[in-house]
Length: 542
Image 1 (cartoon, rainbow, N blue to C red):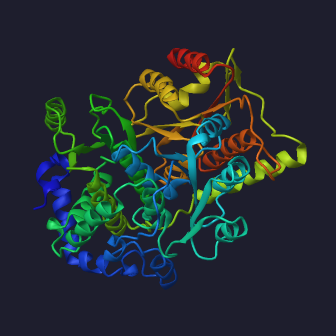
Image 2: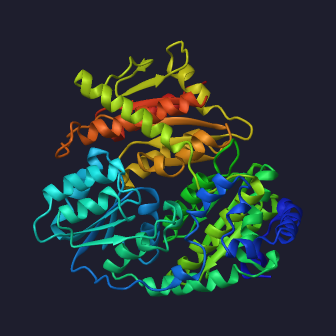
């Protein structure tokens, strides 16, 4: 038995995990997965052929160092969404390198302004997009190409033949790194999308890949019970099958980025066809887990856990909550976790009967955003509906019928639902001050239902697939804000403020089309005062 299995206490999942592991052995899953057998996920020849083009992450070739990327002289800014940036961010946080490598994955004007203020010490900008056509990434590239000095080096990471590859050549980028085309975005952390920005930041990429290589070998173990990837996959399957489908990702300091990366991998890979697991990040180590029977706790911890943390785990086990403990000795071990989770999600997809390598509902929000932007161009500005409720600093919008009282408008999203979850979708600048303000929103809503926190538009490339394609148990409170000092995008017919609000409006429409309940709270003026007003509205009797 491997270490993770020994440290974990599965409780009500134990029997289901045992049965699932036996089923994995019956179909020879370990060997077939190691050999990238695409028929594991579909017998339809057309579907399995498409899947085969997304399996380049499997195997040991990704564990070889890339090299050839010299460390930057100063700070590095990474422009990328979802799988193009989350892995690098996870490593930067684990290695304590966030002051050297920063990620910008937001179109909110205040977030762009904050990054702009950092430019004086930036020597290298990495523009990362698999497709080469990601609207947020290219808009950010437009802006920073125009605002960086001539001494700042630009680098591209993309697939061969993409628009970004052509752009890099046309704009004289210092380098353009062409990734293997058969690696899907959220499975790309151990490819060039992870290594290029990390090597620029002088993070130990070789060590990360060495640990990944060890896990690759362990995940080739034929007996599923001794295979750490298949064992974790069986836990995920059992959690979904037994109603413990809310994965509470409790991360030790430095591992919060790993939790965010896991959130995208699990949500976007399993959340489709009406099934899936709901990963919940931003879970404090000293609470916030809840003890409802719909939860499975995943502890991402350093080997030397605090005594207090160990006591908390013991309390959860006593309450009958399944607990999985994954311990890292040092930052380089994050490479092993990357591969373990990729193998686990791939295995879970087999048992759940889904294709973990597509994202069929992501396009709906993009399509709706495009419609909103085109209408804004035609009409000379965004068309915003009349608010259902207007306070001093908060306006509430909903597609449903409302009596006009804030309590009635908010009731459908805040009242607990058996087996449900609440998604807080924040199109706000992501920083510690805003996170602290949003904590007050999370606290007033309690933990009767787990609450996810998605930063817009970043979550559209992560948990957005789960919201629309997964179990229809999510209700959503979306937060938008007045642009304040808006920012023009060179060569574009709209500003960053317009783009961010259009993405929020587009996703709200896409969610409503899927029958999800959405209330949008638009904040004006001081965010501190506006969020305090929203908290007051949430406290009103429903």
